[in-house]
Image (tube, rainbow, N blue to C red):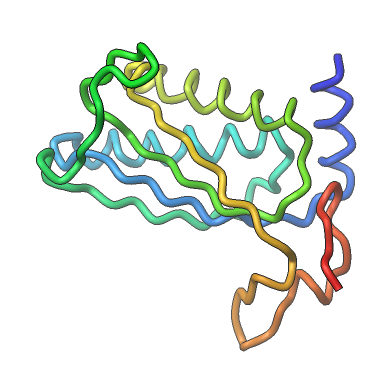
Length: 152
């Protein structure tokens, strides 16, 4: 219930545009890579209310030996990790973040990624840490983003 309430509140006032970096094995075909990117974006839309057309992603395929990971860290049996790093404005409640992780994992499982292989990190920053073109800090000009802290 709290997740639904928080999610609705963010959807109403969200002017958000995360930058998503996805690092995965080059053995995954291009269509699968695109499906993974689509799944991550859809989770951002559904879980925290990112506008559907605010999509900025970098998908980096790597030779498998370039992706180094502990295959059993914290008792999770990893085989072919997909790293998802999302940079976004700080301020969302923990419940929305936890829902985001669940939705990303579910969406990626639907396209053939084992849940154990989904590794997600959030990198949060302030509105004035973004310039999305023309040398301007557009998010500062827009004002506060729902739930985000703005530093003076």
